[in-house]
Length: 81
Image (cartoon, rainbow, N blue to C red; front, side, top):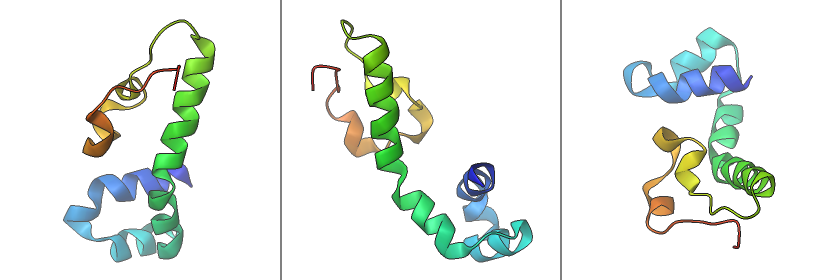
């Protein structure tokens, strides 16, 4: 399911969410739920990454630089919180 939603996210400007959801046979509300949950997924991934390297600061861009919203890039996030 995640791959379908990621594909929709990457191509929605060209084809539209409704059409892509219909072709991929996924629920349109499910796509928007997945999209809304992106910050929480990024936070969990960052927490897991920080746990692996407790003595090193971990910038949020280490997770997925192309998908990090600009608002998160204004200040570095470290494992020290």
